Image (cartoon, rainbow, N blue to C red):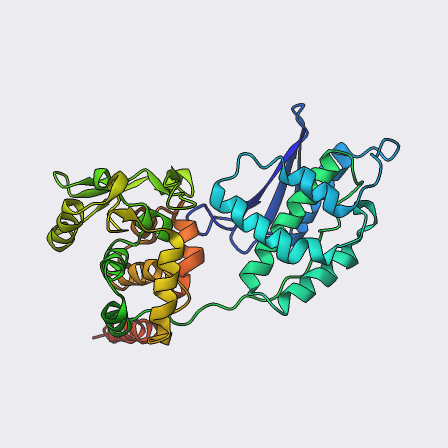
Amino acid sequence: MGTGRINDLWHTKDKTPTSRYGIGKRWQAIWSDGHGNVTKRSFLQKDGAKAWIDTQIYESTRNPYTLRKDVPFATYWKTWRDKQTHQRAGSLKSLDAQGRNWILPAFEGKYIQKITREDVQAAVNEWAGQLAPSTVKLTLTYLRQVFNDAVYCKQVNESPCLKIKLPEQFEQSETGLTDEVLGELLAVLPAPFDTAARLGAATGLRPGELIGLRKQDINFRTGHINLRVQDASTSRSNIKTGPLKTRYSVRNIKFGPKAAELLRGLCASAGRHGRLFHSAGEPLLRNHFQVAWKNAREHVQEIGPGWHQLRHYHASALISKGFSPVAVAARLGHKDANETLRTYAHMWFGDDDRLAEVSEELFSFPEAGA
């Protein structure tokens, strides 16, 4: 089976311009056929490179004379879903929700070989009227994976998910939580959720990492939270941990004296399984945290949609103090600085007043002949 990848010829991995910046076509698609042969093609747009890679996948696997018998899309969805044994529980939950609520209803009654690009675009347009742009993109990603699998398994000749137009995504101009809003949030959250919010804002932990935090994860000798697992519980009778979001999420988060004092109190009164956040010893679940946040939002609407806002608050605090994308990425458990920049670039480059100050300083050079 061949493989493809796309290179940005104008930038390095850390977004530094290359010697070819601004010259020629930016995106290079590379296809390896699995037998040592490599083909390269350059494109002006990244979508063109993606479409070419998808075409190579199609050409390398299709055989119009041996397509399998056509089946309802819902049947093939189940076949594909059963193969996703490598996915984390949280990912499967998201996948199932998008399939049940959006993907399967969009293609109800249709056979997989009869679904066209126009059908997919119509579905995306309908989703865009009810979902956030990022959620539409995620839903299409799941659908594209289904059809890529169908092409590979000779269930269809080609994927109808090529060159699908997605709704425009707009950058957030504000960070969400401010110091003042965070103070109001802490005032209305009941214990121990107020302490959890304080720790989340101070460490940038993901919600699952925060909820699953255990006494044994805290190293007071070195002053680190050693993150290796996150909460994967489904009920009070099934308290368990699971792997972190990605392998890059495994990290040691340094904390200072104030955080140490807070953590010592939590560790001294830890609940079952060493969980720091519990009720009468019984670990709190994600739905408990969600309800607490929802109730708090009725009093402080500016806090945003969920516990992840505390992570954004932490990131904005680091950025405002001048930390580099590399340092922020390591703290948050991102894959690299590119991921951090994709998420928070507007925070680095949105300070027009500071940029203007630097620009003014450049006019301070000596006059000619002085």
